[in-house]
Image (cartoon, rainbow, N blue to C red; front, side, top):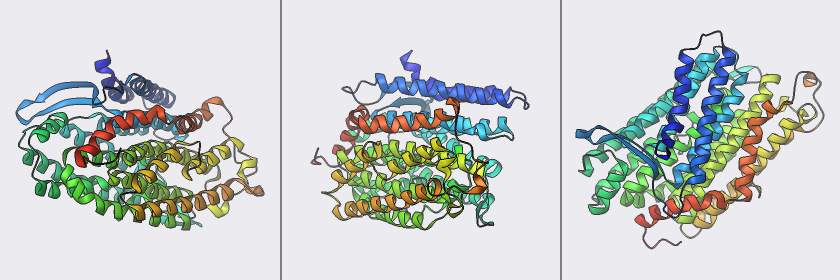
Length: 506
């Protein structure tokens, strides 16, 4: 049965989507129940996979291979190592919380959950796939549903009564950027397939082939930037980031949760899984450039977030800034920094999902995200205010949250290789604290606004509080007991780094 565990995780949302196709349009309550049930199954499977992963063995476990096109070396191959297992758990947590937050959707509920479950399936597929063909297939499956989800259920980004960005503009910009990046990445994948001479898309088989017959360093140096830029668009790597904050702001709350919490992690994961694993010489050549660009992600994204007044734009630019830390951890090529980068993917995903959840709750009742118009909401919604404070403290790197541990590992692991970039990263943490504390003060504290006295309702029932409590509990558990995930990540990160730099410090 364990051999089919990953298949259960992957196909549970597919089963939910198929059930929705058979459901009448006038049954929104059942559509919600089906979505909750399917994501609950995936979450239970992800927790079980984490709990039973055998750390001393390391490597890919629970793998399942179903041959498909033998002449091209394509097969449906799934498996997880310590890195992908943690990201599968992240996605399962965010998906479950997002489905509960989606109860705010009142129009065309069936269609909404159909696209949402398709998005969830695509992301699971990327993290689980050990075949490059299906890796790209699921990547496209994860990207495409964003267009209808934002275009149909999103909202315009307004500021003081005027439309700053329409949802149509945000949708088209997101689609153009991600599609262009996907095309660049596809060129790199096909070049990798042809240049390997192994006639297979299977990732473990390619690793074995390159261990015996390494690809020419010059060829690696030409393929790696295609993968880094193509997948870096969704990371988002500066200066290809401008689509992301606008997409966050225009998307429905639950879509923003997956967009910032998980979808942005696909780019970083692809760079680790494909770039570092298969093209070590190319990675060693190009990662110093990425380390330089990361500084712009961190500093520029932080300053722009500080200048925003729309809550979703603040969190959107903050996400671009925080993903700079992830890319810096990857570029450092030390086991400590790479482990910290993967853990930060997990921590940032939970934190940003929590932030978009409480912003969506406030927007649904006040019909504004403009920070100067808000204030004193802790009087009407103390639980939501507490969740907002928790998200702000996690984003600022407060000890006790998983974000603190992961950022500290990146700084410690990156100091010897990139001290200047590391110092800039520490400065970026100060910028984060400034704008996140200002958001908390502007939203929740100060005198209560009479306009919202009778219109803002707190999350009062256990069901309404559940998604917030799940995300906060995960952040605190990992923050106070990081060894729970660090050993699992380290056993997979260390071989990747030592394959590129054998003399890299432990």
